[in-house]
Length: 180
Image 1 (tube, helix red, strand yellow):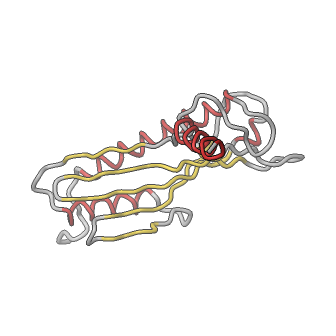
Image 2 (image 1 turned 180 degrees about the vertical axis):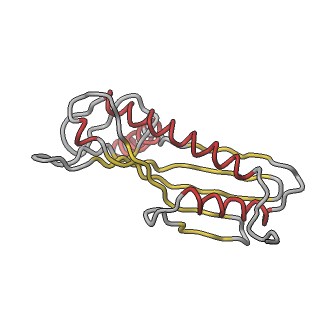
């Protein structure tokens, strides 16, 4: 019984203290805009926003109104802290867009920080970004709250810009099939 309680406490603490960083919203648009039109708008936006081979659209399901894939952004900073050269790197993440008549839902989640190898040392990667103010132990070295919070702040700013771009695109008529 004591082992079961200990396991339950451990799993519960993981759920409570490691909520991942995510950005999610259901957005209503003009009720006359169809699911198919919103799907085309979202697909077009993804094609323009993620035009590098590194960005892969994993799911493109028109019938169910789902687009899912992977994104990545660079983490660069002008701030100075111990190990900054090895912490600078990329933040990879997942994106989901679901569409229905008159509305869509986006979700940016599973943000993972990957540092960069530096001369004489390996990368310092913080892994999954969470809402915690306290840095987890990175792949090497000790936890650094200044680096951790800077990575999250940088990620939040970039994703909010990406979300604004998505919202603008979802309010513009899809031009792919217009007469030309």
